[in-house]
Length: 260
Image (tube, rainbow, N blue to C red; front, side):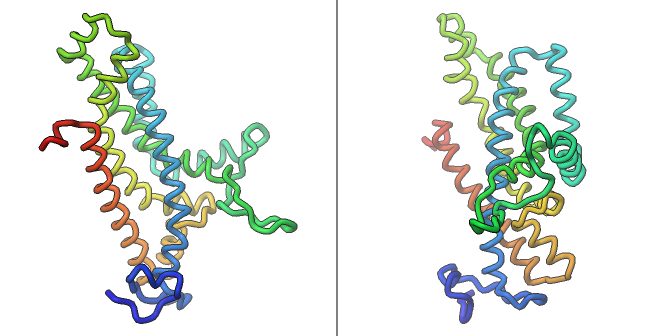
């Protein structure tokens, strides 16, 4: 819908989401200000999930049925089933309170901290615990998908042929196993990224992270319907954009998609 009046900083978007019932602020302005911290949190969590999940999943694919495989899958199932608000409370309590002397991490805090002498400054360490909490569930999913997909690839004929040619295990993993096992992982990652944006409500509330989740929580608490609709629209738009990006990644990884 064309805009007739919004703040100048957000006029380029061409979006009019109305004004907040509570603060009378422009909804689009509030959403665009709150979205970057949440996107940063989700990207950190997804990077954590992909790096650890793919690496551990590849290791488990080579040791299926071992005690190590069973233990890791058990913990992965536990992490996948735990609600985000329970995980947030446990992570905040353990790393921010019990182990604070070793980690130096705080239970709460935002991306920006106010220094009485130097003014506002970036505080990246405050993103560690909420990103870790958000990344637990996608990490569990990525780990299991990578394990199952890599095990199927390892049993294929072309991997056996590569082994018979004397290729090194590292080259087989990088050139054959990893590339062919990533398709289901990428599909799951795109869906989980949008889920993390929606699930950030509880995580941001527990850790005091000033992002889209906190904005949505306060809007729900005050029955601020225009703000809630703006937050949901931002999540939906992000999900669509990520799916478009994933389609392009598919074309790079899978030659069959490229030729079709």
